[in-house]
Length: 161
Image (cartoon, rainbow, N blue to C red):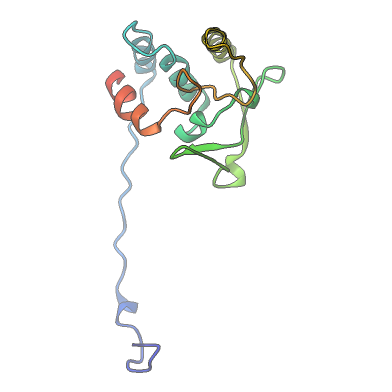
């Protein structure tokens, strides 16, 4: 209407947009972290839940970044995780911004957890007649396919929590 010249200015011009309240993030408290990680070690749980959630807690990586992480993204010599890709809806993609591409320091305990997870993964693949490569996902299904982030959240994370 404004474009056609039928009205001088848009009636929406004077309407203020309502402010959207952001929900406060409910993070685990320090004492809850150990309880959560111990629950991951329960024999009824998937054995890769512990290293996945341990890495999430002690690296601060987002879900898609964790699920897109490959063994080639770990630099054992410099003790850093290189965030290069993110997995979203079964597709690897570039992080949203250049800031999202980053290197994350690994503490000694995170290195131990990831090395133990790598050893278990190598054993699993050897039984299948395969070898682990730098292009394999760190956190994946037994056949190497990527995990589904929504399933992980609803099926595993919420139950453990």
